[in-house]
Image 1 (cartoon, helix red, strand yellow):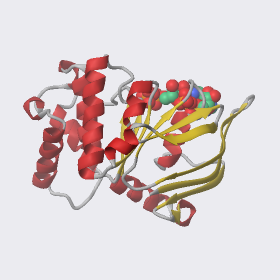
Image 2 (cartoon, rainbow, N blue to C red):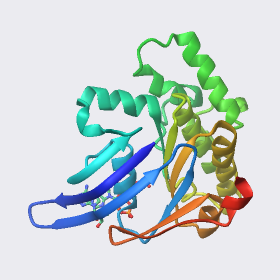
Image 3 (cartoon, protein in one colour):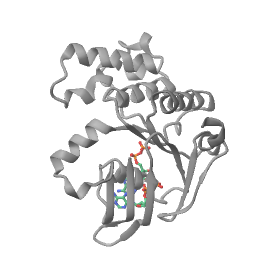
Image 4 (cartoon, rainbow, N blue to C red):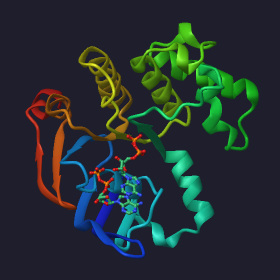
Length: 233
Ligand code: ADP
Ligand code: ADP
C-alpha cells in the first residue's frame, strides 16, 4: 500500500535546521493496523504527513501501491490523496459553524461527480458506522469529545478510503471515550479491511493493533508484531 525508502525530512528555517526523519524505511501492507509511538518531537506527525502525501520528504522515495509519487503531478497526487486516504487528528478539526452532517459531507464537495443525494446517502452511512445517526443536526460544540472524534472519523470514511492515517485520535479523550474510538478503528480494520496507521502515546491502544513501530529522534528503533496479532489472524 505505502512504502517509504530512505526517507529524510529536514525542516530548514533561517537559523535552525531540524532533521525530523532520518533514513526511514517502512512498508505498510494493505489491511494492516499499525501503531507508531515515540516521544514528542521524534517525527511521528512528519511521518504521517509524508505517508498522507501532505508533505514531501527532503530525500527518499514514497511509493503508493508500488508507484513512486515522483511520477505524478500535483493534481494527480491530490486526486490520489482524496481517493485513497482519510485523515483523523487529535483535535478533530471540525468546522463549528457546520452541522455534523455538513461536516461529514465536506470532503465530497471537492470531488466532482457525486450528486447531492448520493453525498447525503454516503454521509448518513458513514455516521451510522460510527454510531452517530441520532446527531446529524447537532453542531460540534454540542457534542462530547468522543462524539466529535466519531464525526471526524465519519468525515474520513465518506470518501471510502483504503487507508486511514490517525494522529493521536484518542489523545484528547478520557479512557472510556478513547476505548470507543479504538473499537471503531478496530472494526474498520477487521470488517472493512481498511489499512490504518495510528500515532499514539497510549501503550494499551498500541497493543491492540497488530504491529507497533517505535520512533526515537527521527528513526525507527523497533518494529514488531504485537501480541494482538496472533489473536486477530
Ligand atoms: P512528533 O509528531 O513526534 O511530535 P513532529 O513530526 O511534529 O514530531 O516533529 C519532528 C521534529 O520536526 C520536531 O523537532 C519539530 O520541532 C520539527 N518540526 C515539525 N514540523 C516543523 C515545521 N513545520 N518547521 C520546522 N520544524 C518542524
Ligand atoms: P494535532 O494533530 O494534534 O491536531 P497539529 O496538527 O496542530 O496537532 O500539530 C501536530 C504537531 O506538529 C504538534 O504537536 C507540533 O509539535 C508539530 N508542529 C507543527 N508545526 C510545527 C512547527 N512549525 N514547528 C515545530 N513543530 C511543529
